[in-house]
Image 1: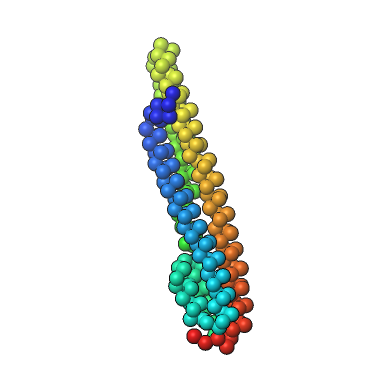
Image 2: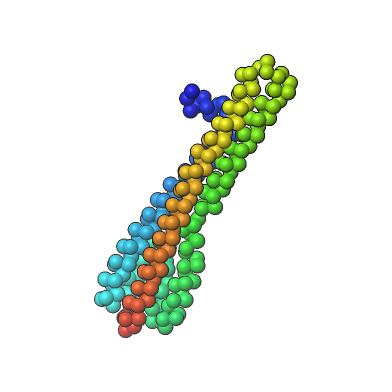
Length: 207
C-alpha cells in the first residue's frame, strides 16, 4: 500500500496533520536560514570591529554595523553610540538593546511547539474516531462486515502513526533551534564583553 493510500485511509484528520507538518517545516527552514545569517553577521562584525577600534575609528565601526544588520549589529551599535560614557552606561545601553533584539531570535518558536502538540493530539483524535467507527460497525453489524471493522482500526493506527511522524521531527527541530539560539546568544554576550573592553581602551577615540 502506497503512502497516498495510507493517507486516504487515515480519514479527514490526515489533512490537518499534513497542514501541521507543512507549517512546522516552513518555520524550521525560516528559522535556520535566519539564525545562520545572524551568527555569520555576528562573527563578521566582531572581526571587523576589532580592526576599526584598534585604529580609533568609531565612525567606521558604526558603518560595519550598518552594513551587517541584525540583532548583533543593533546591540553593538547601542554600545558604540554611548562609547564616550562610563562602562556602566555602555553596559546598560547594550543590555537594553539586547532585551529588544534577542526575542527576535525566538520568533515563531511557539508555532513549532504548537505543531508538536497539535500533531500528537490530531493523531489521538484520529485514533478515537477510528475506534468509534469500528465500535459502531461491531455494535450494529457484528462480524458480518469485517472490512469496515478493520477499516476503522486501520484509521486509528494510521492517524496515530502519522501524528508521531510529524511530532517527532518537530521536537528534534525545536530543540536544535533552541540550542542554536543559545549558541548565538553566547556569542553575542562574548562579543559585547569584548567590545566594552575595547571601548574603554579607546576613550580618546574621535568620530
